[in-house]
Length: 415
Image (cartoon, rainbow, N blue to C red):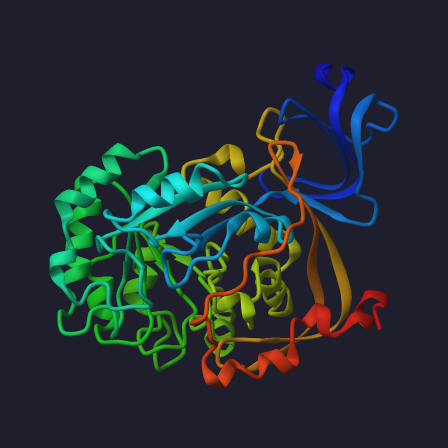
């Protein structure tokens, strides 16, 4: 046992089943926390003095989840949710806001959301200077694509802004074609930052987008069923995307309310193409279902055949490396004590994609505790949804179906 294990702890987590792909630790371990950091991970810390003891028997213990695609600019954008209340019930301790703010609105995101939040929040800056104030159309007026101003804002906020975001689809680029992506490419290249590109229904085409992607960029909504999908008519991965991925392009899920299709996922998984990162694209619509939250999204991939280790890897060590914060992706000694506890509930569950295609699953991840830098996040209610936050008509049936866990309490007993 390491020397630091011989001292008093602020908190000890006892009896949990560790799932930590970043360190390769799997199985029964206890965790000792001191001054907000992981002080010791050992087979047993029972009996060591601690101010607080967390009983994790029968639960999974993972690093705090990292959600690579979120929208947390509540009250200023069409999409934004509040990060802290959702974090406390989902285990997400690090949030990457994916372009909610542009150059004109980023100062507010920093002061009124990022700085007061208890969870960690980083951001991608939207090339459009107005960001996502409205549901879409942010690139229709190219005057909003002020590359020089965006560069100045990024340079002044390098510790928070980690890249550039561009939504490229028929609505956001209406009448201007691929020009916004060309400008976003210019901005990212000038500042040596990654570019996250959203795809959905074109125009433009996936070929036009692929021509402007580079290794290290992030293609989000990688399992979309839209016309820009990366699945060819023959059911194979788009050859240009395949070549880019082999050179370092990141495929990010970004489930959201309109960007995850089970049939596309199954075809690509059959080819051995897994998303590099599983993210929620959480926002005012998506939290109503069928996405709900990141643990539910992970449960869909368990239903699709991925292992528990594979799904946890894609929300911990992998996104941590992508955002350049490897210390946030594992429970190694000396790293921040960002920790999540889950029950893996066995039962019979029905999951849905955004087109309401159902798939059956046998396991559901349910978060029970979220800890940031050794402090447990309190469970609080989220602010009510905005007046305009209405699901598309085809998804409104989800109100009758409900969340798979809440709708089927018998699953707690594995029936």
